[in-house]
Length: 319
Image 1: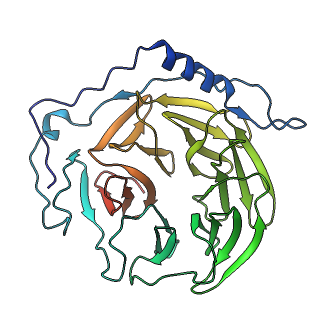
Image 2: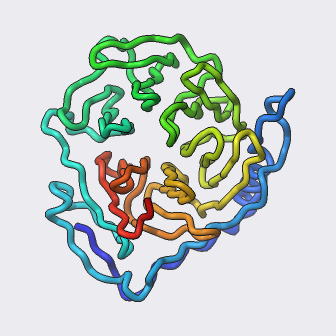
């Protein structure tokens, strides 16, 4: 059931005052580095931090009770709070899909939607199992130039079709995640258990290091020329291989999803989805969050709590 609760705005949680967290934030700002010609990992500062301030558009009319039991299909146990500019819709779960939660999704430009359930890829619309010849579970995947690129659990990069898997070999630097760019012609590689770097790979074959980090890069969105990425609770923006700049830091909440539409940046934790407005992170939804992807029809979100897909239709969105 989707509701808006109470008679007053939800206040921003106060930043954690502990010295340990303060030291971690200073370290993160100082050590997230861009690539510099002649030296892949220069010790350059990442820019000044702007702490997140949670605010709402239209406080007076935001607090209204709305029920979406029918729109949410079988997900009536979901309890979230919505901004007045947001409509929440569930994507129907095909009967051919396993009942287990999905851990990741990827959307092709033509609307083809693929989900990862238990390390196996499925066509979301018809429930068909993909890549029967992969020989290994899928760690991460994304669309690039219409093809489905994957990283297997044993660290191999390849391309998938309905039944086959073309293995391009083991990744030398060990990234465990890939994400497609908003231009659709390049991949971001990140994650891993060490050597926490962000790389861009274009179909022409060039691999470029964009930044390095003392901690794992969790999510990324945009393109090589302008992109955002998250490290734990901190959000950075970077142009090309220039100096990353910290935009905000959520108190005690890891950023798990990012999306970009033009100049508008969206980010998500496990319990909220936000739109950035200057130095503000404006809540769109509280009570759900996870991986994000922007589409012309709104934001797709894979809710980390139940592993199900939803669409946030933004009534004030500018195309």
